[in-house]
Length: 136
Image 1 (cartoon, rainbow, N blue to C red):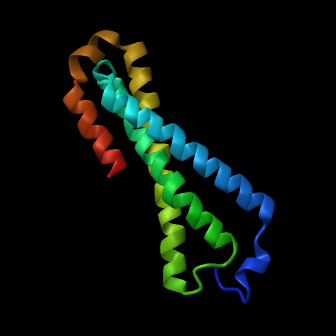
Image 2: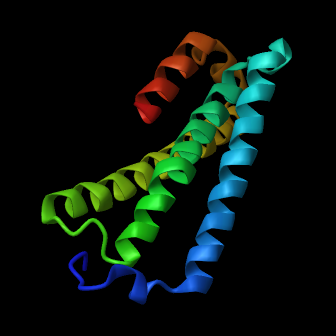
């Protein structure tokens, strides 16, 4: 997949433009989420730590994952090991984003179905610890 003679002759312009637009919107939107969380003390609640974890994961997808996808689509990097690292990084970042989304869903599910045990068992320290595991 990554080995080709002239990489830019295989560049699909509409695909690359769409990926670049998605990357820019992803980076801008998730940066705004992180700025809002940092500035507004009222946002620092249990459930919002999972949202921040998702924002960081998606920010990394926009900054690193999408450029790797564009490079892979044209056959770069040409060295096999670098190509495998690039594609593996893309898969790992997308998987982290998915796991963060699952954590948000499970958190909301638990809060709605078991509100009394949720407030007793899920503390900000607990949420922060679980969200750090998802991102790192």
